[in-house]
Length: 65
Length: 248
Image (cartoon, rainbow over all chains, first blue to last red; front, side, top):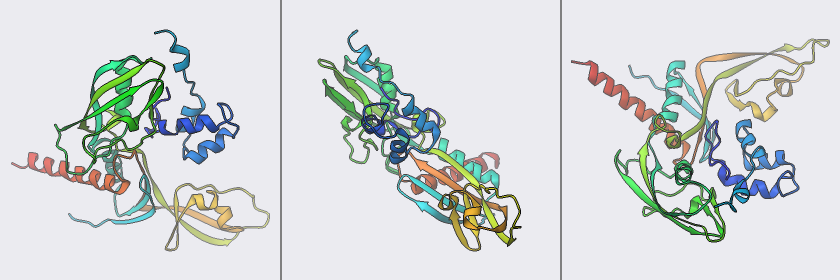
């Protein structure tokens, strides 16, 4: 699951994750990730890396309960 | 010693503000910054009793995620030992969001509703009672009301003669807020480059002594202006405490 807050500055970023995932090109959408991040108001590079480098593992782990 | 500070807002929204304070020392400016980060009490989930958790995350991981969700904190309504008990009950397949936390008190609610807590698959269920308590940023980052709080010197710009025609054509980068006569201008308005604002001019930039531009963001537990006021209040309470302790 995506972290609730940015590790470095503490801004709440979790709420933007689903929109980012749906819109950004390296996830499911076709927009430029940089523009989507600007749009969401994440302008510090500490918050931006949280999304760019995140990989959801819930689907990978869920069969092994 | 009672001195008045001159405060001027440059940018002011619910969650983010930029303001200029004149007449304070660097030490006091840093005191305010630290008070905003570490001394303003905010509510956060601290203890969670799980009734059922068959999700892919362990109880303690989920409890931490719930703790990091900012809760709105009304001023003066809560004492140090008060708790608010929020409940959550979500059954998969669905995603449990921070907005699913049900609060008994309409003044205490998750500030953001769309933070995914955990994705639940078919047959998985999350039911828990979460106790929120009042805490301070110095105890745990989840109690921090302000995020990314910083300050810079106000910069004074003096426009001089025309720049020499064959001089170097270099960008002159400034960040923060500049003072041009009586006007305060955020450097983002001209791309942080003074040569955009004053083309073909010699400009000198100087720090204005004892004038600081603060940039404060709130996590949503309270509006920024209230956050700053409460931080200043904690400073004066602590100063009073100290005065009482050292006077015999």
